[in-house]
Image (cartoon, rainbow, N blue to C red; front, side, top):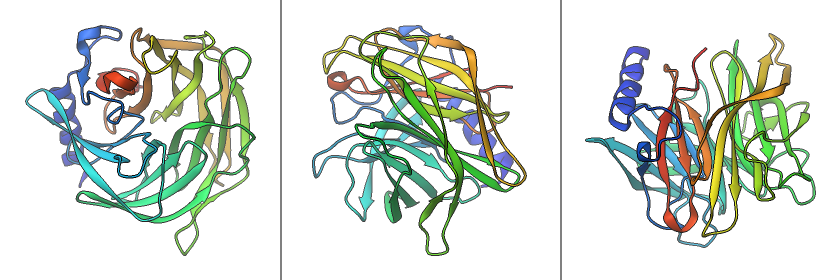
Length: 298
């Protein structure tokens, strides 16, 4: 899709879903009603739709869906996972400059290269993340394109005040046979400003704005019945040099952009060509919700 049509599709998405001030409960639109339909990751597609990752673990349960916006409502339709078995898909990300190609991340640290055509996502290849530590639990993965170079950011989510998240960054590419490849890895510790209780997952998702601002979702989870709490925060910046090296600088005092009591945000996606983020929740037994918020500009 060319740029004017892509921007028009994003405008349609925003118009149908609605952009509103952060934190108002009635701004959310439900996209699922049970624990199998929560939103664990989002990747915007051309045409005003988005792919949705689900963290289901049992065979036969959905791994991916497509959310479509019509008449001010958001509805899910199934996308078939074709290829190597996967469970607990926590993030999905479009590959810049490669239409129809996506990366999906499983909680235990396996990344899958997918080719999506129609309602089928075919596994092209897969590989473990580098530097997987004991007990690591991954919920976030994003790609950044600068000057023809790609970089990947991902994070072990952390757990409560005593275990910060670990944010990783590395140059990213593909081998000639299709396998995802990671270059030299850097890492930073991160504690969320809000929420900050014992059930906090300090990084539940990551997105990067066009100017390199790092946005993170953070969420508090007290169990399948909640209560939940979450926020989106500007955590720092990322740069990619002309040679492809990656530098992450975390803010000494991260800026909380919005708080969302009662919701567990697990997906943050900056929508291409706009200043808006698409946010998704996995609220366990009560399903998933979507909304937009004006966090991705400048």
